[in-house]
Image (cartoon, rainbow, N blue to C red; front, side, top):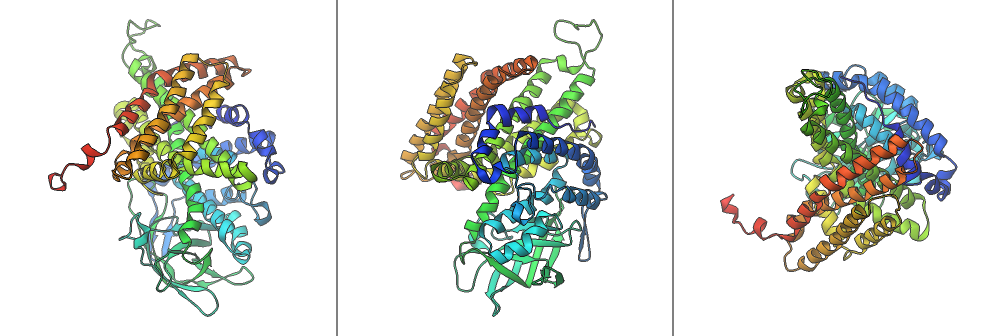
Length: 585
């Protein structure tokens, strides 16, 4: 299995030439003092090295060994503790955290690229740090000054980790059904009792404490509140004390991500501290959820990049069959890269991956402006974050699994056995479509809340901005530009039709949401390909520019038509889905 190599040239190109990161950072004083392109490139160079030399070597061994639950301990695979210690010492857990609390203060549009490298190298390992970063973000946004000072420095340093404890067996994604209780105590803290399932990084041996963010209900309350519940109690000086009655009931035995500890967590009158206002826990948790949903999309993106590298390398080395029309070298067998169907699969993966990276950087950019910007720029970015986040989570993770399966197909029979490593990517990335809210739920949120919830205001604003930027491009095919512009307008037209129907046909959102999100994703990728192709025209490396033109042409001609298919599915409505009697299923 070939070692992972981060696509640093592609990443720098997106930051510098496509999304003009230096200008974005300069407009945000809180970021400008921490980063410029030289700093960003130094960080990415080091992240590439860490991914190749520290994370990738434990990817397969961690999968084969898995996590163990022995007594009251959860034990990660060999090499994980040492790798995590080195990873934490390098400051990677707190990369985007607040500098005054021990973080590095880097922008999210840089952080997403670092995350992609880590996910490409080792999915399971990367989840531990991702959950910690997300939990710290939530505490910083909604926690009291005392909670921030006590917990965040240790979380950003990686000495303590974080976990998000939401769902329960009877509740699933409908969190209104949770039963975990929080009883007020005389000292202002709360007694937390209940159980949670599917808790990624709920317990492990990588850090000395795990800080749980737990959703629970106050007495006689229909609302849900959020509580910080440490595994081990922390005194006023920050020192660790006694166990906090937070225990692991079991670990899940999963299809993939076997080195990531997914736990059943039990709370037996554990001491917790309220985060934010009572009964406003979901509002607080969604601060973390937005970042985690993007992170899970990037998990799919990282898988796509790793899968492409493995499949492309294999296709150039594996000799089988002869090129149509005869071998160009006169050989009796050619590398399978000469075959049209192999090229089709590799190009599909390549164009989806590079456009997906653009989606992750754009979403990270909008998160940065929404967090650090001011006035209308901040408000608009917040609207765009709402619009883009469910797409980033669902479309990136769906295409991530597609990419892994196509790459496995390139390997043929060798893709189905463990030695090549590609089957692990398929197993590891499958969960990305399910957790942090299934992709169907993401699509319903996208169409029902983010698109039609404001009567298309955010969608129209975003589409108009994309249309204006397309009009200004001068180094792309005019027919391609016209096609993407037309489809952007079709998105608004079809969304308007759904919006008009939703009152009389309430099932239309649920029945058509996935197709609308996929249509949006494919059109957005077409827009990204034109942006990239235009920006590459002035690239000093002429081969780079030619490559982008080939790939853009492939996407527009071969992949973009999928958008029209999905829009037709939306227009077909809900009747054929909803009219069939339940008894006939």
